[in-house]
Image 1 (cartoon, one colour):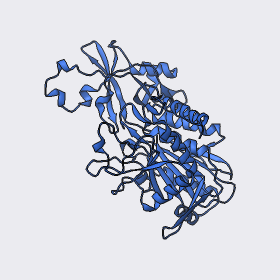
Image 2: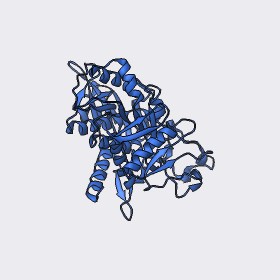
Image 3: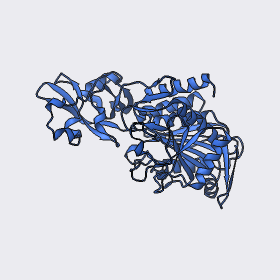
Image 4: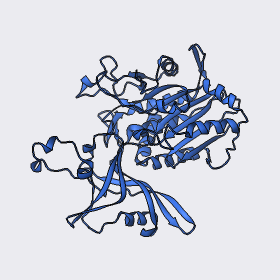
Length: 441
């Protein structure tokens, strides 16, 4: 990829991250990219009417999305790329205002996902999500992004801590409520009403999240690094979609799947454990005029990638990395293994993925956890409970995972776009005994 293409992808990635402070906005921005390429929106409460050679997408809950492209010719299996649009953050509770000493107003929040909460102290924060507003003829959902620096979680000065307090676990209910105003009459519903041009009393409910207002930034002596909020997993969200939109395949139905709620276990109706993917596959199969037996045969020939980032070798904690598999930022896309099946990669799926990467000259490296350091999990092994496919887990090596601002290699981010495109353009013919060939689709 030349410099112009590289710069285009990095600019697009940074803009996508900046415009996607929560999973609702991430899904909406993905929809906009699909519509721009002529994809047609379908709805779960309506018939799926499809034509060969055209692309479609369907969403659930406004925060999960599945896009697919049907080839002109008869398809022979599916290529499926899975990722997630949510990130660890704070969710605002109902009736959030808390007045302290008749002077300050803070907001009542709870933590969403896993992470080290103290990293959220002392940085400018804003609010985004969706709001449900009463109308004369029902209730309407609005996306909101307040945009401005409007909140901060102030830390306690060390002068005011006892020796014991300095080492105590941070208490979310006591220490992590963000300061919103010096006005004791501050009202969150009034702010929301102004944002959606409604009356305060018409705000019925909301799903609102805090987000750091730092913008995505490329930096370093050679502009080789990217720092941004929500790199996990918006980098994979963007890269997979870009690869999907730039690819062609005459023998596979290509699916791009963006799930919500990975950070809290994927067990929601819009998560990887839901029936969203399996029902969409059944409806595509039915719309093409095929019976259930055809779907089962096609799924046995299919291949999937579960895309979520992994940990890079840390410059200050190198002992935390595996002794022999030590991913370095800038050395390529991660192929992630876990013996306890927190990642789906096995010898077969790894061989298929490596073959695709080698055929297209795309750099890759292996990630495994240090055996004495607990690792994370992702959505691939959960999604396969609903749709069992040969699957590999991939991603990009990054630092500061689950921090409000994370860091990775800019070159790796673009390599993931190329990897997604190469995957979507391929057709892996896997035999029952595990032997396979990978051809151009």
